[in-house]
Image (cartoon, rainbow, N blue to C red; front, side, top):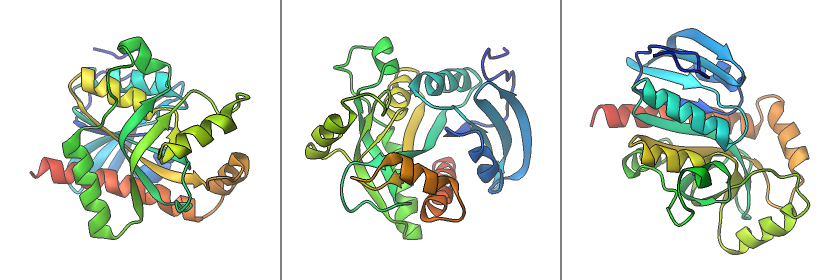
Length: 243
């Protein structure tokens, strides 16, 4: 059945990698053999190819949990059973460098989309098999990574953002994004394996606009981190497939 937002009807892949930025699809394509552009509708740009023989689809989700949840729902409808968000985060702890990887063991449900699915007492957790596979890849490749809780929220332009960051920092939360909590909750409810790996693009205490500007340009530390998170997700898929 044709999916309303992805505008896809039939795919081969059962594994999906979900970046936010549609431009990041170009980076993912460089990892795939015989990549084929499928569709580009709204924020949802999709490409399908193989990684070391394994069919994989990559779909951009734009910014925010609502569009990420749409991607999870529609990919699930198309038969995808395993999905990894490869996104960016702003660190909430010192000692997390630019380009370091943050792998979520769970997420604070400060977003909007997860609350529309289930009461906030329901936890937001990744699939443990997928999480373990990603951690194993990081160790094998000696990538710098941090594991812990992600704060998924709605925006960073509201007036109390700085105060909220300090609160979550004191509680040991590693970093902030918009999408992970919603993806964890929707994936768990729909019985598909979901996880999130984030590339740190903001040093804690530094202005996010400065860090994001640095992220956009060149082969920076954050550009290296972007490639590493993609590689971790793809290698984790292989581990699960060959298990």
